[in-house]
Image (cartoon, rainbow, N blue to C red; front, side, top):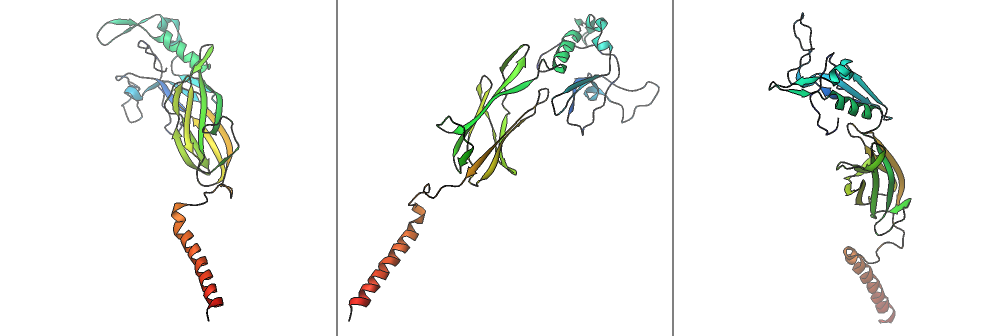
Length: 261
């Protein structure tokens, strides 16, 4: 469970097989490299599990963040295994890690760990602080999200480097990874797409062992107004020259036509 290291866990019971098509289930405890599942009276075949492929305890986290744990052993949670010692490969004995494992497993199952929440989500133009529902194409926008993780009875800033934002209109136009600023704050700065329309700032975060986060913000990106365009564009100088030369030619021809004999 997580990155916490525990002693070897004693287990007696059945092994499980997980469907690879179901992305909601995942292994929590697997067998050792020498583990094998099968009947002594039957020959082994491709249906027998072995090694790390043998799943002893599995978890399921539904799309609404509901959690279920399935174990093939009742003795795993019993006092006998919790108070026993586990024999190591070098012949030494070590206190079994069943107690720590069961405690961490219970915390995860009942939502006491691995739970995330969105504290705040903001967006605004750079050098501004007010969120807007309408932006202009090519605006520089700052998007920030504050994520907290539950640890016991308190909420602390979440630490990660894989939180992403999608700016989409039917299809994603921008996908960017947010930068961790510390204390659970993640930010990114991006330039609004140059195609105007109704966009969604979409945050979908799914990480194994943690509750899922989802947030949607709908904004409108409009084109420039007539008075927001540049008046004289360098690349348009040839067109300006052709227009003024045409006017000068008409004036010169009119002068010759009216005053020449």
